[in-house]
Length: 126
Image 1 (cartoon, rainbow, N blue to C red):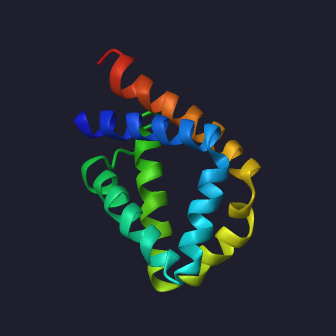
Image 2 (cartoon, rainbow, N blue to C red):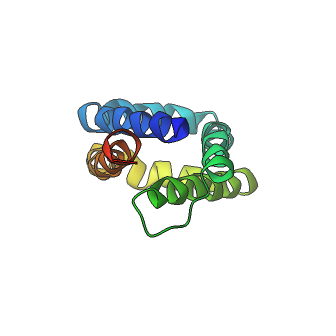
């Protein structure tokens, strides 16, 4: 599916960015925090992405493809929480989001998920 390919590539690129530029991510979110609108800004990006997966890839089967669905629901739920309670984003930015190691760890986890997504989207026989 084209939507699987889009998200597989995006996850790998973002994961590698987290691993090789963790301080840039810390700085980015710290600056976003200063606006007082971090929750809204984050949700503006993640809600459309999450909804795209929820609407066009809501597959609940015991298969690696379910990773896309779980990520879509996760992004959607996080976005709704941030839109209703924007200060939740500030807590994340001030807590784990303030340490470069957290971005490296998150990047490694995302890379594993992204690799599974690449396998499902590009390599696995249909």
